[in-house]
Length: 86
Image (cartoon, rainbow, N blue to C red; front, side, top):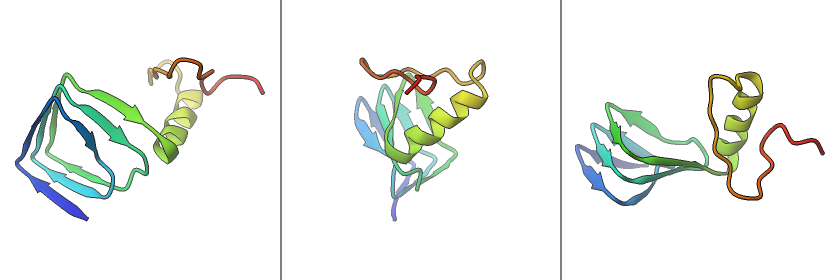
């Protein structure tokens, strides 16, 4: 597992998976999570965009089904979302 400590990321695309992030600052970044296998400790996110893919997206969809009023999700164009009928 990669470890990042006290780093500042500005305007970057950052993949969280398989890493440990300690006291990092993310400013105007695109944050991507796929597996959920990462640690965030004392990090600060400022004006960032979160993108969930793979297993992370599946869990987010399940949470949205149970808590639609509490978890706002934005889906990519053409994606029917978690409540689509098959």
